Image 1: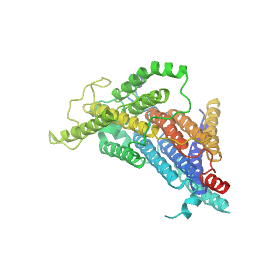
Image 2 (image 1 turned 180 degrees about the vertical axis):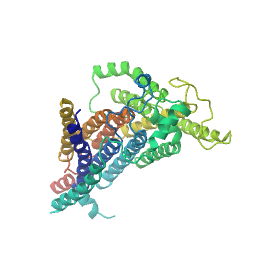
Image 3 (image 1 turned 60 degrees about the horizontal axis):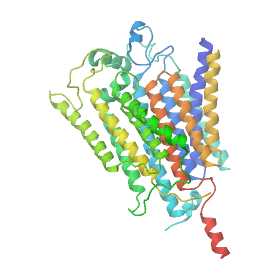
Image 4 (image 1 turned 90 degrees about the vertical axis):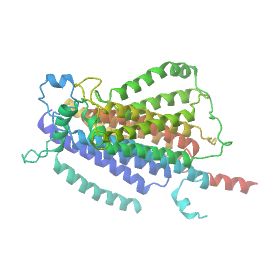
Length: 126
Length: 240
Length: 95
């Protein structure tokens, strides 16, 4: 790819990752149904993982795996940062665990109050 | 009124975030101006190729250089599965079979019985060859759990014995900790490599990395199958 | 130039699915849109030369998160602004 297109790719990748995080944050702050809030949490996680992996990309880089094809090229290509990928691997699994526990709490709340709107649940005390 | 306030706040947050990241740049090596500071990733790549002789760098970082974080992650996954099982607890006589509106068609039942063994084979291949090609324990475990999910959705009376899942998961976790404690043998530290490392791109290379990843693969597969089995057996109320 | 257009179209699809997921009243469609976000994100991880992360995101984000959401929808409400309280009041008032 030419240089001007690569300059524009900076705005595209970082801009869409930050925009994903902002869309998820909007859903957490404004929406009234509990299930929409949990969907917003999951979207924030996705945007964050994209932002972290996009930080470690090098131009004309290759994947950090020492295979036979890499040795044939005699190491002419630089390697992408592998430490950020290890962090994101852990973060994806833990994000799934948090989503599963949050959804089980939503089911439990529905069984008790029979409504999922946060306005109603704030008003009822027992 | 509330929506306009939220949009203004998000615009301010987004502007400052974008300012930091776009000034950092995308796709350039950030320390290329200052030649004395060497980034950490060069050290990791060098040690993986020469000392450990493992092909996949991400595997060597997750299991060997930052192995204690993987132990913490396995613990967090175990805690979340326990919390999910205890929050959705019902008494023994309320939890019944799975109630479905209409059973699956004949294409689904015939096809899922045919494709279930290749899915298990693919998952086992992915977590055994974790140090040679992209993959590893977490990816292989999730693929096996997806295979069991397919069988649970296609057949109404397909059961997985909950007791054997618990035994497999506990044994795999204990194996991980015992291998870590065996690193103390030659005067080393917790989770140190004590088996000999072979040649690059061989199946028996990397010492203790392959054994740890196989244990993690079994543990994640058993855990996620237990989660799906617990969640699918909830008695739902019918609503239109 | 053609690669640049492909990459921009992929990112625009991801943003469109995100906006669809939070403004749709039928919750089942919103959950499927979340699955589409994870699927496109897995392709983007492959473009950024990270195959391990792409495998993990495709397996966890598409299959497991969607099934846990759908089981929650089965045990609770289907539309966003529906609850069980007004049904009970109507039934007891009509008696």
